[in-house]
Length: 418
Length: 148
Image (tube, rainbow over all chains, first blue to last red; front, side):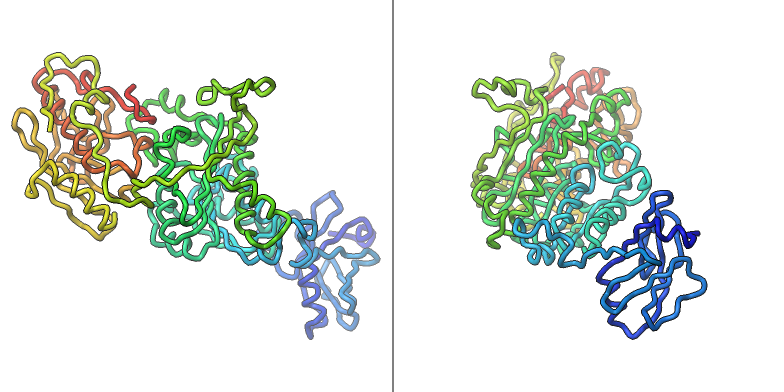
């Protein structure tokens, strides 16, 4: 209960747009809800209950000069006709309206354009979730979030979600995180496996302005590539490789090389994958059904959140550049920088990058903590965007035997050549 | 799998096998399949069923249309590392582990899967003759496609 004296100790916030609506309405008094951060001297006032409340809740009465406060209210808000409000003698701070929420971004990005853009994010793990929030902070107005997983303990060290989100669907938790940054954002939540719901995904690809593929398996990347090609949409793929020792980002622009064209490129190894979660790796087959627990522990090795963030950050910049393309905003200069379609990042000089140069003495070699861009060219024989006139025949029996056979071939009647 | 892809797959298969040795089924649905005959060097014929859900973006599942028994007489109806098998079909058919899922790429073909399955069947028959496990002859495939 907030006493009369406590009124003066609090700081109050209210949604300015909703306060304006109340001032313009015929009502003279309405009830609302206040959420108090206990012992922190902060109360957030709302005209309607939040989907997920916080702190101690109070009944609030908003009343105009000619209105009468409700007797049951514990916080009385006096609203003036000029759109200002007070609780006792304390001014209520208005949260800026949609147009003014991100004034600091003005000039750098075109808020009007971004607020009307629809971004489809597939995968809300440690890569996808910060991307969603960063794009919300930049003023992107519409999100479609796809992920069927829930927030689990092993996510917490790298995910934007907190311990309070444990057990929640990632789509719900990330939606709240987006709304926390941009309450005006429209968010559609799809807690589904995209690989099993391609008909739903087709519709979402068709509507989206850009697609960000932040999943941890090739199957969904290949499906994403298919749909990007089909609907001629810009798509950005990002992934961390084993133990997040590095990663890469690929951007598909309609008419250009597709994700399949990456296959066979010396710089790109589709089998390198950071396996962060035994369950999902078993689902995708990265861990075989018969793998022992020792094998599993060797396979599941994760990097730090700080190892993932450069990759997410790159995807955000590319997405903002593509969404703002042609708008002549401050970010337009990136259009001259990010002309390539494939970018590589290394976090540590380990395994995959063990022969890279030392950061302080590279000796002409690529080093860690720098982006390296290159242009992947279209593959004429690509099974998605190429001429599709032939298909790989692959190994004959003898080659297959060499690939799979052990050294114990004595006595084995070898298959005949075709 | 679209029609163009199916035609390409058939083009490759028909180069090696006569048209009565294979048959596509459930085309136009989410779960098309290929039934294809496989003859081993000893002259035995098996029918393979290659299920192509989400093909070619997903590794196809390859089954022998019967439940095989191993060299010890045990049914091969479980995921087994020594046998190079995965979980069986709902009908109890033995599933062959041919490519590691992480090594699968959409530019691979049904023919490549078929070649591996025929090789597996030949080695399977060898294990029946010698009493040695499949693992004695077949190496495992790592996620990078290399044998380990």
